[in-house]
Image 1 (tube, rainbow, N blue to C red):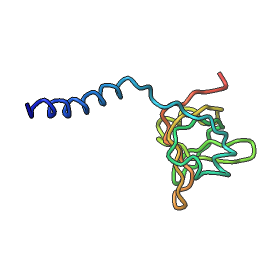
Image 2 (image 1 turned 135 degrees about the horizontal axis):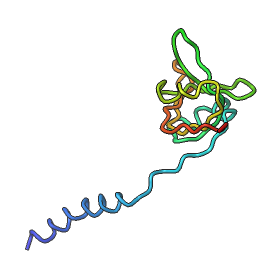
Image 3 (image 1 turned 90 degrees about the vertical axis):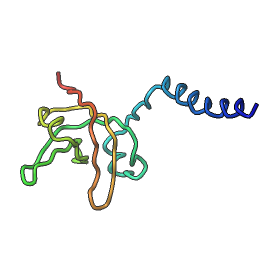
Length: 115
């Protein structure tokens, strides 16, 4: 008789895992560069989509996107963003902000807007 409650308890985590498998990943929130620059802490750690023109500096090599008012967010990894240098893009990824590292977007997807 004591085995029955034990079986029920071990089935609960399995049911929870199975129900979690059917959940869709979170949708990215569209956030303009202006908001990422003015309120970075509000978006820290979130999956976001933003747009801008790809720029770079050679030393040390790094890439960012910027808008017409030169508001900027660094884009990583370099290999994903580099092919779009000088082009308008929409980037989706995980945003982070830290005083010692600035505003960064770990890109998952880059879509050119000028095609």
